[in-house]
Amino acid sequence: MSAARQSAVVIAGHGSRDPDALREFEALVALVRERAQGRIVRHGYLEFAAPTISEAAAACVADGATEVAVVPGVLLGARHAKNDMPAELLALARDYPQVDFHFGAPMDLHPLLLQLVQQRVVEAEAGSEEIIHRQDACLVLVGRGTTDPDANGEIAKLARMVQEGMGFGGVKVCFSGTATPLVRDGLSQAAGEGWQRLVVLPFFLFDGVLVKRIYAAADELAQREPGVEVLKAAYLGVHAHVADVMLERARDAAEGRAAMNCTLCKYRVQIVGFEQQVGEPQRAHHLQVRDLSAREQPATAGTAPYVPHPIEAESMEIIQAGRDWSSFPPEHLTVLQRLVHTSGDFAVADEIYFSAGAVQAGMKALLRTKRVVTDVTMVQTGLKRAVLEQLGVETWCGVHDPESHLMAQNLGMTRSAAGIRRAWQKFGNDMVLAIGDAPTAITEAVRLIREHGWRPQLVIGLPVGFVGTRESKDELRRCLQVPRITNSGTRGGSPWAASVVNALMIDAIAWLVAQEAQSEGVQ
Image (cartoon, rainbow, N blue to C red; front, side, top):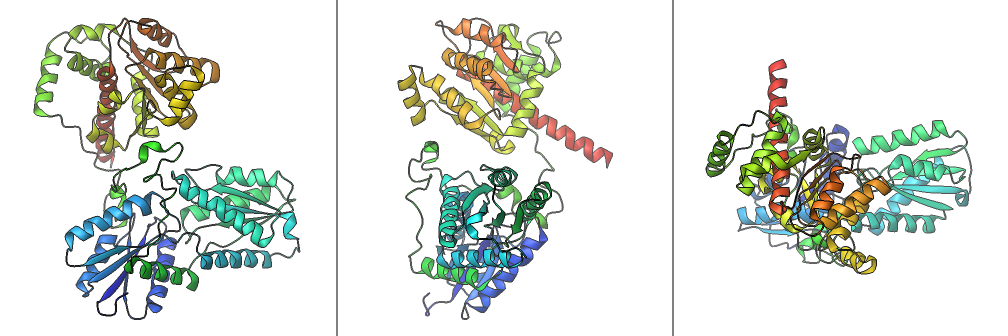
């Protein structure tokens, strides 16, 4: 960094609910400070703990820093390093225009970290009384697991490098969450291959909830499989190699040499299966858990009730007074009245079909799976953005997915139907499925449900048209294996399907508010 300027380094940690993790992170920051040759070094957390990254940067500025390098204290580049932390940096640059902010690369597979991994393996082997040739041992490398295949692929690359570099007979990659196989599955698979020894290595910087779970799973396997020796290698931890990599990343950032892996970054290029995330804005997804430890109330408390626009509220009052609703079950009213609002026709309420418990199933699914799959983008566009964000619900539509195009061309099906099959392959049962345009999408969904055991949490089928529309909805009504909401006849459309999902989300918010009020009353 430039000697003519007052330079500072902010180590941006992920944060944890586990105090052991926070203590180790702060011990590492102290080690970085010792080796930083007089530069200002502070730390901040993205989630769960204080100080936040912005508070740490503000403290550096108050200390006189005119140049601040923000270094991700994470091993690999996934959402936190690619989106959340850059979003923080953009806000800092706006708030402090007189300061030069630089963003460093994640630690990645730095040679010093590979040496430290080697050291952790040797330490684990030294703790055993058995002498076993590494060709008779399997390395079980456990990564954090993310939704970014780039980061998950780096774990696989690391596993291969350590296996070949240290001479292990086999290697098994597994993850603590999000990606598969999960730890217990990976350990069971490795144990079933007949190895004399398994060396379980968490590729983590610090202790914490996930590392403790990994070690607990290793202990469980050792009890189940007494014929297999299970060694638990240490995570990377507080070490000079880790501190030196962080300082190197800070120097590279300040000198404009921060090397990011953009070749396979799903936000910059089309990666198979993640094409829709190209160009996704650098928008923070961690705000609900920022500085969580400093709050008196948990993040789940205080759900804001849904407040409609005044014109929307007036319309709903007219609809509620516009006919006799007493013959309909109370749990159906939000859906029915919003469909009337969308269609402008009170008679719509008489043609909607609900399977038993469909509304409750849809509400619970939205709160649990946090995912809505649509047949066309018109349905996706009709969903209320503010409500989706409040509940943390993601949406996905496969009609323009490149693999859906290939599937449609090669299997002789519509793109909408191919998108439904992609959703089955991609997400399994964890979704609410909303179809508002394509009868072929309903036909494909029903076929997958009946012939392949697919069980979406709720299927909303309300396409409009004259070719196959009535027949597809009749088939859905007769599909007893899943909760469903549909109608009879040719009417419907994307706005109808979106309205049903919006109604379910509004009811879900009302349910959360009621639960919190009841909980406060009990207390």
